[in-house]
Length: 419
Length: 204
Image (cartoon, rainbow over all chains, first blue to last red; front, side, top):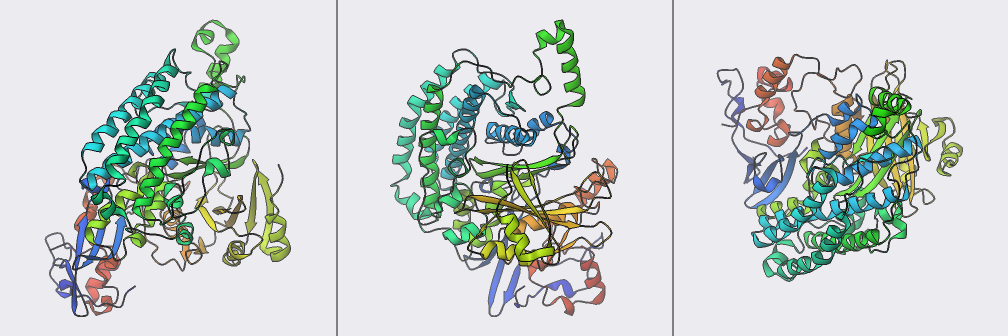
């Protein structure tokens, strides 16, 4: 706690009608200087959701930033303790709602690790496609809204048009644009419809062209460089100490990507590069995310090439719900259907942590099971929660307008931070 | 699956302070005593053979069996060795739920520990700013992720709505924000008492 003294008219015994102390000024005195407290949010377009920042200013320089979160707290972790593993999937849609399919995949992988289930080859490839589609739409939203924060409106429209194309594919596959609930323990909710690959192939062909156009708009743009280069810098050592992950960590020069270093879904067999920054500033975070979109496109092309017909679910009636047609005509299938809907899939006693590389960083799901069909504890390790925790450090001594740029570069999504 | 070599290394170095090392779903879990946990975690971070420089997660787990102790869980990772280790501290329910903060080792622990405090009521000694984080400061229903906390909360829906609306956090600046902690003792006794109870001055 600082030793600055503050002049506050709290020392009056004045109270308002409800008996609360009144009359606290918004300026605080620190020695000879007068500091000002600015309240940003929770309803502010540049806070990307319901984030509240209390900013102490000396002139226009930020002395400190105090983030307040929790406005979107929904108690997902508590709810998960009252649900079967498959019933948790819809909750994950609503955490990081900019990349719902990747969250679904992470949840299924965590549950499968806990239960020791090996999924089929087709399911793995489709899940890789789902993860990379999510990475692209999440980065598109990030880049578009960040552009708006810096006063660039046109790329937002171009990028959201591309995002719309992926949303159409997502809708054709899962029936929903946002609340996809794609995965199930041991497989997928549905296989891709006929002709869907052609749609994705067409997207993969056209998308890099649009991305390069956006690249020409931003990468050498004087305003963009001026607002972002050298702003919000964090060193590699500090980035690790602050537990940053994803593009935030890599922009600081730490070559760590869960897909490469703790591979899941056979990522080690795909040919892709992990972009790593050098300066750890806003601009490097932009470059890293930009390049990640090109790389995701590459991964999707490779995944499409190796997508072979086959089953999407494991062959285990205790885990996978039988098709409705069989459940209505076959006695055994009906019993399995009933048992699964009423009792859920049982997990052995134990615990498992599964982290995957989500667009925002490392998303980890940690399950503790006591042998019943509902987890004792479902912990979400939220990447943007930890990334946002570094905001007070990133904003030390910058100008007020840089707070907006830095906050945008962190790429937060409040649904995941507050859970 | 086998136990990570960090487990036996911990046991040989810290002896009885490492109560047991087990394996679950391929992850190694080391149970350590509360009193030496900070020392053990610092060693795991700094020892060149271990070098768990990255704190993935801090959380707590409470079991449905009320007799079982509550666990504080540290998920550690060594970025260069690409190795993971889970360290757990067991806290018996009849003792105060207190452990030493690891904020001095990893800055990333700051918000994670605040969340564990907010959701489970575990106090982290030496934490620089142990406040509620997801719930508002005057939240009075207890610790939501504890097993004795009903899914719908302790209070009625009407009372919850009333309290949530009355909290109106944006209209208030906390003591910390006003930096008046140093001048706090100069306030009249009655005002001090009310502020300590969680009342906040309104922006005037």
